[in-house]
Image (tube, rainbow, N blue to C red; front, side, top):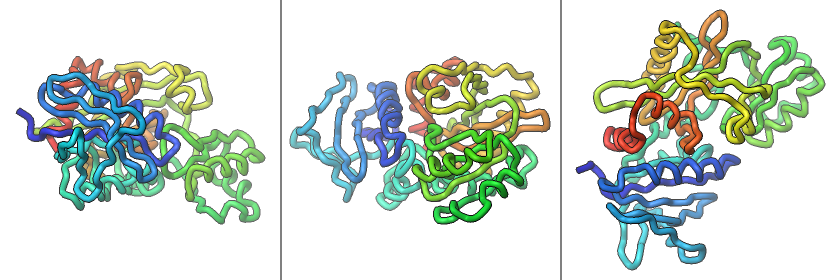
Length: 339
C-alpha cells in the first residue's frame, strides 16, 4: 500500500513547451500504478486548472469532454468529481517551463503542505536559470563550464555588442534564453552579422539571454533519482544529430539518434554518472533530474539541469529506464514513494 491515494498529474504550462508537457503528463499518468493510486490528470495553463481525465484504482481511464471539465479549487488543491470532493495528496508535476519548472508551482504546493515530485521551489528557480545554475557549479572539480555573457532585456542595442561578444567567445557560439527548454529560442551563430537576429529570437522566449562559447565534443545526458536509500544514476545517453545542434526538430521529430548506453568507456561512464550525482547533491535536487553535458577532449562540460525532464514515450529518461532493465511503473512508484 502506497503512502498516497490521490495522485494529481499536472501538465500543460504557460510556456512554448506546453504541448510537449501534455504529452509527458499523459505518458506519466498512463504509467502510474493503477492498483496503488487513483490518478487525476490536470491541465493547467494561464491560471485555468481543469480536470481532463481520471483513472480510479483498478479501473479504466475516464476522459472528461470539453465544457464539462471540473475546475480545480486552488485554495486546497481539490476537485469535485460527480458530486464528490477529491482531495489530492500528492502532485506529480509535469509542466515543462513556467510555472512548473521555475519554482512557482512548487511554492504553491509548499505553502499548502502537499508533497510533490520535483525539486523545491528554491532549487527549481536556481536550476531554471542557466546562468545562475552554472555559477553554482563553476568552481567544482567534476565539471567545466563554458565561457558566457549574460545579456538583459534593454541591453541588446548597446553599440558594438555583437562584436564584443564574438571577440570574447569566438565563433561559432550559442545564443539562448537563460530559462526555458526544448531548445526554443536557441540559435547557433556562425557569423557576427547573425548575432542580432539570434538575440531577438532568444528574447522572444524570455527577458535574459545567454551568449555561450561553443564547445566541440559529444553531447551526452544522464538522469539521477533517489531510490529511498541512495542516489542512483541511470544509463548515460549519447545524442547524435545531423542538425547544427539538438534542436526542437531533432528532439521531437526523429532527427537524432539517441544511443543508450552511450558509446563511452567504463571510466567515462563512471565519470559522467558520478558528476551527475554530485551535481544533484550540490544543488539540493529532489525527485528525478536530468543533466546535459558536452564531453570534450579537455573534460566534461556542464550544459544545464532539467528538473522536469521530458517523459514522452520517445523521451530520453524512459529510454534510460528501459536500458537499465527497469519497469516504468515501478520506477515512477519509487519517485512518488520517496518524496
